[in-house]
Image 1 (cartoon, rainbow, N blue to C red):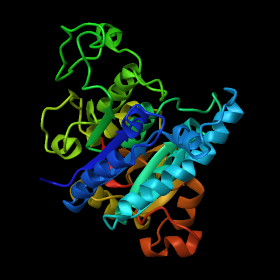
Image 2 (cartoon, rainbow, N blue to C red):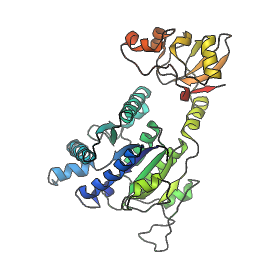
Image 3 (spheres, rainbow, N blue to C red):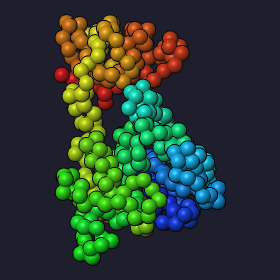
Image 4 (cartoon, helix red, strand yellow):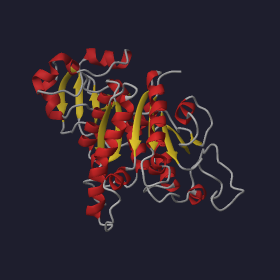
Length: 367
């Protein structure tokens, strides 16, 4: 099986088994499954909940008022305990972890979004397991993603993942609430998310986390539109992560609506209007159009307009006609400094670098 990028979201109910304590025995079993996939050549990203639960446990379950400051205090304490636990468990299998704490502001600001993406890609490139959580210690209601289901969907988009696994205390999405209706049946596959389906999504059973089935449905809708397969399943099924990676039908599956590459290129064409133009020489035209190459700084002859890193631009041939559109790795000022130069000179000219291309082939659409 070809290596995949798999995001595994672990809810508080999964990590605590519905109790007030972290279930470290079950956590090591989940780590073992992730390590097995990692050894098989897959890239694994963990989105973890339970920071506040870990903080409460570490402090001996203090009686606290439910203020924002107290929740942030518990998260600050719990984050350290949680990442130490993940590190120690992955260390059993010779693997390192790297923590990424995000807020909605990090994902909505284009520059911070790209920085988060680059960090995530660097961790994966060095075979380090990213462990992602919302930065509850500093997040307010205005900048919170709000739940780790939706955070995991955005992490999956950041990583251009193939599969998002949402592990919970439920077997999947049912035709009715299985807690109240013994005739409720598991929905094995969802092709269309509509209002009828949304009404089936209930709340969380354990009451320890911030997400229920409704937020999982939201996350599934976001991820599948970005070209990512999504599965909601219980974390108690033996070998659940590996079996889902193999395509076994467990829980409720939401097939991707497009490939990630198709989705991104559609966004380039249908998204925000271009913010500037990059004029390229004949050699770059041939490389981009005939060889399917990325656009290198060497082939750039002129920059027009003001644009930031990560914004869309027009790519113009020597005759002045628009050849393509793409998403820039560098802003207009930086491109003006490196245009016409070899890629290996980028870092010496700028003092830093975001890669050796101006626009990567995957971020470029020929017109």
